[in-house]
Length: 330
Ligand SMILES: Nc1ncnc2c1ncn2[C@@H]1O[C@H](COP(=O)(O)OP(=O)(O)OP(=O)(O)O)[C@@H](O)[C@H]1O
Image (tube, rainbow, N blue to C red; front, side):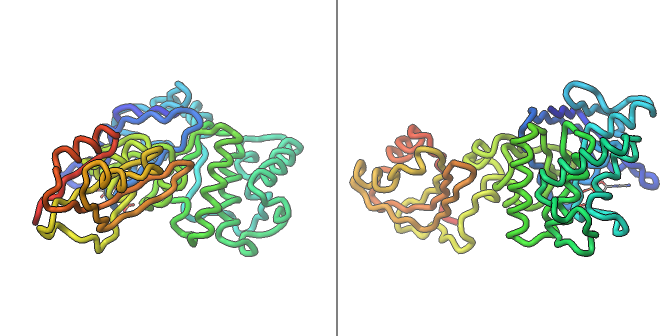
């Protein structure tokens, strides 16, 4: 588990204070994958630097499994750093070292005996599916394979938390999927807690159990994927499950509503149910339906006949657990 409490980071720039983190609090339970998304300048890099203790927060604390990493002595700092394994956008491997030598590097740094290093490296190679590339150099590996080496190296010291900073931003879609599947598999096998910092919504959709939206140094939205994706008043829903860009607006031919729903409801014939129950035409103007994990999510824009009893229909939909937004004419 990682616990971030009221983390603040203020940079002094000339005569001005730049508040990069403005009281960030977050708890990610053991074995969960949490995504942190935000635009450029939101504070993502600062958060990474504070979590990896490359930068001291101005105030606030970071703890892994209840053990505080911040405000510790220099001696304790080295051990504290080992509790968080770091995966970068570009794997940042040593070109002159082979795959196994790159993975061994953090173990050598902490003085692990050679035979223990060899055993651990061999386990890690197997874990990330690179055993046959042990003697290869980074220049002989694909981008995805290099990222696998980076992940294995991050896991070498048995961290409790894996912190992935834009881990797939430099990869093509197919390789992105493979790396995210690997991260999920490692979480399942090692029960490790994972934080993924990303600007890519499909990363959140494919890999994360929960998500936070960071804006101007603050977490402005937070929750499990299912909760945020079906919250029409939140900002993450429309980016996680957007309607097609050319979705028509209200044209006066009848009331228009947006529907967000998930789980069992998504498999129920919601539309035909309304048509039958309220004896009205229902026209689907636009929609997206996605499977995330083992759940189905739907975001639809529908239009009813001009004489439809909108109040009753909305009440019925809400009682069925469907989030409804009535669209006003622009
Ligand atoms: N060393 C620094 N000195 C002064 N200001 C800084 C420093 N590092 C970051 N900042 C400021 O803190 C704010 C957050 O920056 P940060 O780099 O953490 O954002 P980000 O979300 O990582 O952006 P990006 O996605 O573009 O990397 C910005 O206003 C930035 O200008």
